[in-house]
Image (cartoon, rainbow, N blue to C red; front, side, top):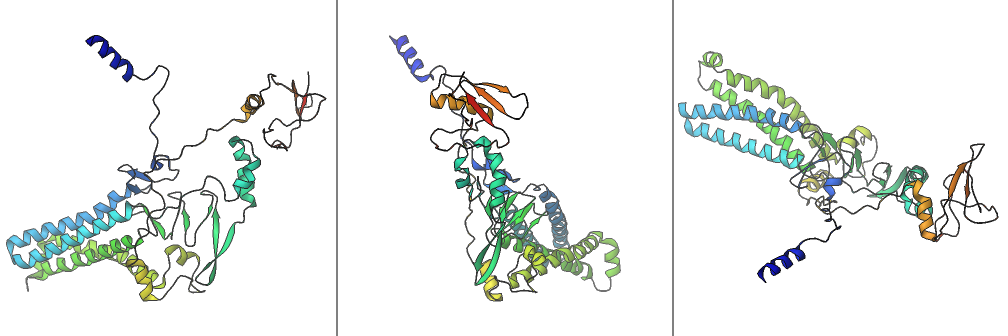
Length: 392
């Protein structure tokens, strides 16, 4: 009896023969058509050039670590209280800099969900029998759509463009990033140093990142000079022996022109409520800027407004796609749909201009092989070919 019970349990626990286990559903980040790189099961979103973060990290971390090591050495030699405060400030700026770098590069910048078909394609595709014909009508439908539309923004008329890749009209201030292959909200630019688009949801973190980088350069530059000039009358002797401080001074002097200039430029953009893309393309100094609200409100909009949530939850289950039906199998699908026992024998005309079918209908009346049951008027996608159906 005990053996029988064990066998019974095994029979009930085993899956029936011929039934395969259903595959695990894929998440959106696993099938996303953009060029992004996802980590931690879609929680972190990087650009395709995320490897450049290693270079950026080394360019920030190497001089910061060298400066901190120099301060630790000076703490053991002279004035430990002052040098400890300098060391603490350097560590704080470095940690903040890396934190803002990570927040800038690893979050969704404001990616806009794509459409599977153009806005008016639903009506146009109503007469198309199969998805295999989508490649025929897609460009025809897109050609019928206007390339731009006018929308009102703060009393001004703004043109928005249609994106052929994402099949949507981009919202105002959005643009398509050719590197990430995404339409992005309030697109500013794609930064290769952080390996990510700079846009609506990470622009404030980017400003904090470049600002902290500028402050860190100035901080290391200034206190490296202080450590050299601390001994009055012996500066030449100290300079000849303190090569590390000299290297840090030269490095920070060169770097601050780049990162500091970028910071000043973006502060100007914030004051005028522009993006880098708009500044280079539209030149609002020659025409009215529909987005500016004055300097105080422009700063408030960027730093004190809540960051909007992401439009896409990349960790959601991706919707299942319907299987495509090949054009060559339409006849067999039609045969099963109408329940006809006949088979279609196709032969090529001697002129090579048309296909003739034998085996269905009577009287030699014209019949469309792309006929869909349920439609009163058949649709002929092959306009250059005429198809006749005659009875045997």
